[in-house]
Image (cartoon, rainbow, N blue to C red):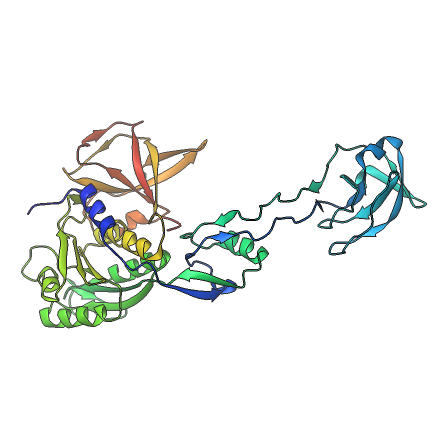
Length: 403
């Protein structure tokens, strides 16, 4: 079996044409976790006028040296202040209030004593103290949030400040997920014999894809029946943008998926990539729909789902990248177990702003050990040419959070 180099497989994936021009408008309150379809640009300055950043007295800075200043009255937040301060005058001004005309400094309440309509200066402040200048937050015309950004609490707060009632977001790609294999039991099913195993792949992948911004169609499990699987795949392709299956892509007598995909009229983009785990992966395309046939082992299907499904989802959403990759330093020696590009579950720690990798608590064994991905794990990438990596070597690591 001729295996495609991992880097080549990713380049080919990146070249696939996907429909990334679908959008919908949703209320701001419903936009959490969605992906912006357009840049968010400021239509005004923030603040639009000099603003008090704490409670105090708006003064001319030169008057502080006099030691005593007359108070004209109050200036509450939200008040349209029209008075102009003259020399020797001040106005009590509250947090968020427009600074009165003529004032250039705010002296906080704690620094003065008020008595008989005047304040006595107990401790002076620099010129411009506690005054937010025009445009401190942003300027009119600034691009505040770029297209392709996943909306979090911060984006919602900024857009609320811009009075963005409705938000244009990318339509979630629909991803159908199914686990194949007669040995697979879905949740709640009773086992007929001890050789049967509980399905986890379809639930793991569904959660992964939803985290990445997709809408998931959960198809459950399917036994090793060629005609039944083919009909299920055909039905899924009628309503999903991407069909992701697990199992049936190796070389066994009951591995039907690899044969079914071409019969569906799909063009195989590639089958077999030089990676561990998951080298039997298949990527196919039928018109604007995609089929990803992943291996059946739990760790393998999860890793290949990250490496091959997430980039397609990201492209459909208009996101710049599917995940974050960082350079990290090995805290212990690492020996590769294969001649392929390897993806190994690891722990990542950050010390003084630098990433470090270790393998404490990680089991060494087959590609079925999904528990290796617990506890905020990451994926360390070791290239085909890597064999033995000494402690202190820098490696690439895929972070498995905030997709």
